[in-house]
Image (cartoon, rainbow, N blue to C red):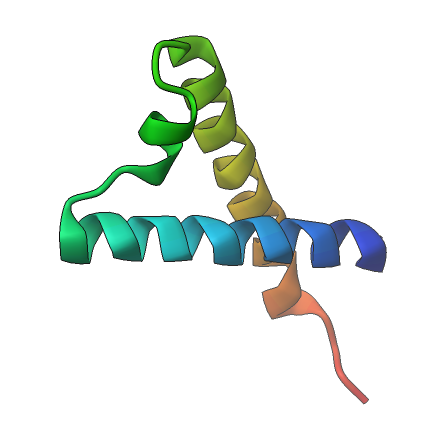
Amino acid sequence: MMILQKIALVFTIIGAIVWGIYGLFDVNIVAKLFANVNILEKAIYVIVGICGLINIGLFFVRED
């Protein structure tokens, strides 16, 4: 399960950077990469959202 959370964390960090760039510079990188393919753009957003939900589990991991 740790590998899945680490992969999800990478996607979440990338998603946060994309949102930061969008907020600061009004540039949607995902829309630019997948110009006319709305289904791929939505799929990327869904994947990042699912990864964010997976990362909620990091709050409940006990560190020794």
